[in-house]
Image 1 (spheres, rainbow, N blue to C red):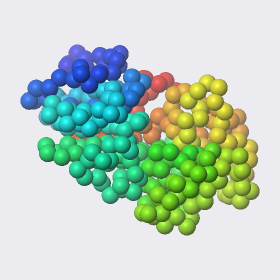
Image 2 (image 1 turned 60 degrees about the vertical axis):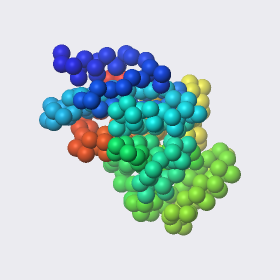
Image 3 (image 1 turned 90 degrees about the vertical axis):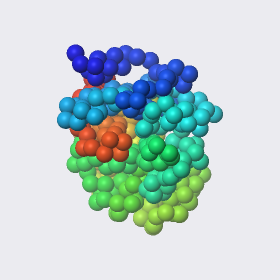
Image 4 (image 1 turned 30 degrees about the horizontal axis):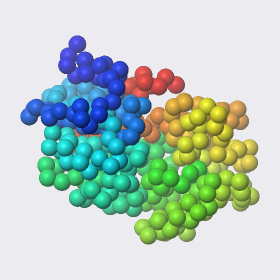
Length: 314
């Protein structure tokens, strides 16, 4: 077994690192990592190290690239970025709760990420950190691959108004999506989201609703694509954000949650014979785009997808 394969296998079972555990890398190594709080649940190392293993077969310069997961308290995020840059880390992924807080620590932010108001990918070029957001790209590719949905031409119904929803809605608007509905438990959160989006986009084709007041006009639209961007479904006792029985036509349903692999929302979709998918594919595609930003190489979706399915059998 070569070194890279050993590392990939080993990291399938390794816990996350504390920031104090991180040591300087040797001059021939390049470090990548995902930062979160907590972070032990993340399977990003499995995905990225599998793809790096595949990439190194074609490009030997990536033999010594390695990806870790590191627990970083929000109050230590800025110092962590400085330390990791000094220690030889070139790229970082960010998950909860760092995607928005990091904005004030960056030297540059890609324009699309600015419009999204959050970043999940950082690139260090030797002197400064630049932020990107690959979540919208990940959803776009996942919808196309899993449900044969074009994000530009379908009637999209987003459930949730948090960071993940905002990033994906901004991406859809940037691509010229024809019709977007956004639902949430809180009307206040919806108003804040629209106010934020309209600073960068024309939101004339965006409508909102609360989960307890789903309008008839939404229920009657043609063949909507329902996208769950809430956390409802993570818990075993969680109910669905809304009932799919409210809608007419042939729905397609995408749930960004991938663990559990089948939420109540997806169970209802299957019961009603609607085409549906969980969020594992979005996780893979956003990770692929991040690694392409860092390596400037085409990354194998298959390698990451296989690693993801090994971690979370569907």
